[in-house]
Length: 197
Image (cartoon, rainbow, N blue to C red; front, side, top):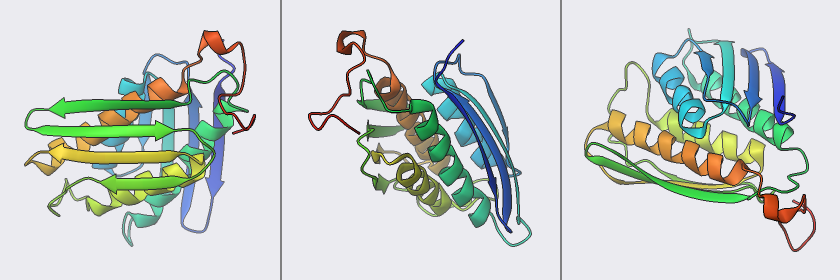
């Protein structure tokens, strides 16, 4: 059984979030946040990253989706960070292109311990099933900072906002899959000249 697992509980006056992740999973997922489009994006992280992921969230959706999306990003980043441990033996960095019909996205991840996010989804501001697309950028930023990773996600082509968002999350999932793998050649060494990440 994988030791690269983690569970996070986040409780605030605005949200209640429970997340579990297995980095060495098979792509199984349960996503129940009350926001259908967001659940759809989270399912791509699991399926295309081949992570087992469970995300259950209740939030103040009577106000809007902002707090739920933001806090899920924070909690998911914390869960990934906890599951990675001291990052011994990691590949550390990964990147991927992902097409979806007319859309094309690129993502690059460095599990550097230094949080940074450059997100350009090229969304046109159209409603995505009752979901404001700008919150996807905020989720990715929150995830990157909680994970303490450098994450770049850029949509390179596309017309349909749903296709662009989906391609971006699939690309991110594949980049995360590559970065979180164990490199047997390292023999458990930390992948940094500093000796720590």
